[in-house]
Image: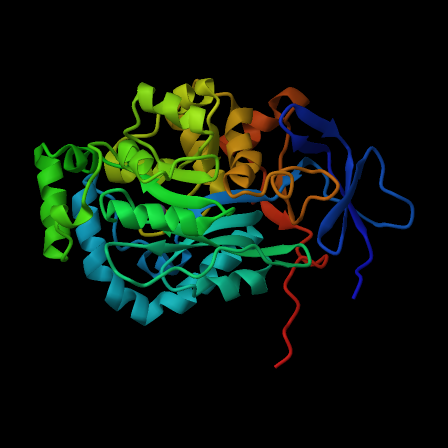
Length: 408
Ligand SMILES: [Zn+2]
């Protein structure tokens, strides 16, 4: 069925970096943006959202929705290996008890709070159906870990109208997967993005370098779970080196975290044109650190923003994530942070032009942030700092962007 077109307008409209338009109208039809203009087209239903900013639906480039049942149970204590241990201990029981309900609630929250696209790491594929029903587009990264033979499904993009439901391949991390398997997984990812947690903690760096007390604790943790260092057949002494040795660093690689990246390594990431997703609250909570965002931006690396899972972040709000990043790095340009949460995430997930911008041909839904008493020059900063006059929300979810009920 075809839905009537609806033109959404607001006091301000942020179409893309450097393109803030007062009072513009964004028209959606069947979930797609068909027009961005100074006035609504004739014949369209018009919805004036009023005082605030209309912008592209946000892109949460890294989370683990199926871990939502662990919310609040693992307050980060700044020790990565301790956190891994509690994850392994709590995960089976908690997720049996309340996993599905918590995942549904998490997906609904994403939709209501204005997230249009999510990069979701999964070991089960269980969140995909909830995402489709809620009208949240997703690149579901099927994650491989250790030497297990379980293979991720084929990587492919599938559109249902304006709803993207893609499957892609992820490797857990350079310290938890043998070199040859890492290479095979990257090859399997094909033309889709390939995600990997990288250089998240000091423990990871020390483990790969074969030194240091934190590296030894990680080694013991892995060995206790059946993964011995010699089984990894390590080809390099650094996280990024492992990736390069496996021929797994290119423009389709989505590095996640990057807290421990050096300036030299940042240059190599830039040359490879890989993307990096920063998860500020998770990174600060688990490791006390954050990727060198200023240096990464200066090097021209495409940056995305993610919340990570509710096992390490207090919420799935990318609005709160933006505010946390700007608070931690006050020198950053607020618009650069907003770009990470929109266009940067879309590019990292292989969806440049399809999400993260207000352009004809891009998919909805949109997002709206109520503001009060803000002048045009203050709009972006107020949005990124979280100085909102009401809860940010998704807009246009019912204009055909939801997955149609499948007959059964
Ligand atoms: Zn993760």
